[in-house]
Length: 118
Image 1 (spheres, rainbow, N blue to C red):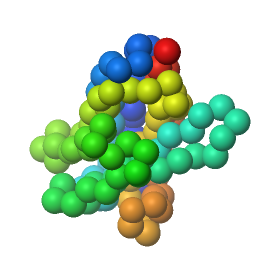
Image 2: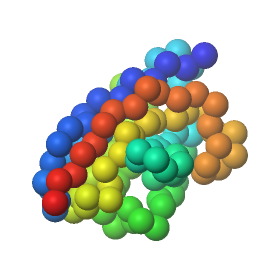
Image 3: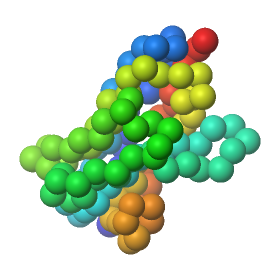
Image 4: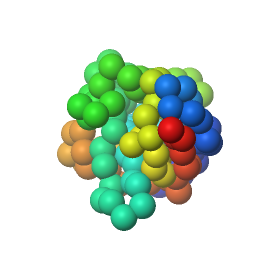
């Protein structure tokens, strides 16, 4: 079993930055990822990182703006978001225990809201 808790969301102006964190407990060390879901839209993949942190993968929409990282000594994963756009507004959730790289995961957090104002 894995428990995931996200933090760091908030309101930011377009062009600004935010850093999201995901704290994992229980069984750790798995591939992890960030997803987001805007109101009225389907959940969307954002970024993924392997258990050892050596490989990452990004959605085209966030590539070169977002950076995923992890600290296995602290069982945390982060998402640094730069040059934020209003279309980045969504609830961001972290996921763990990859089943199909980079899109499939078994465990999910509750999410943290990111709102980007224009």
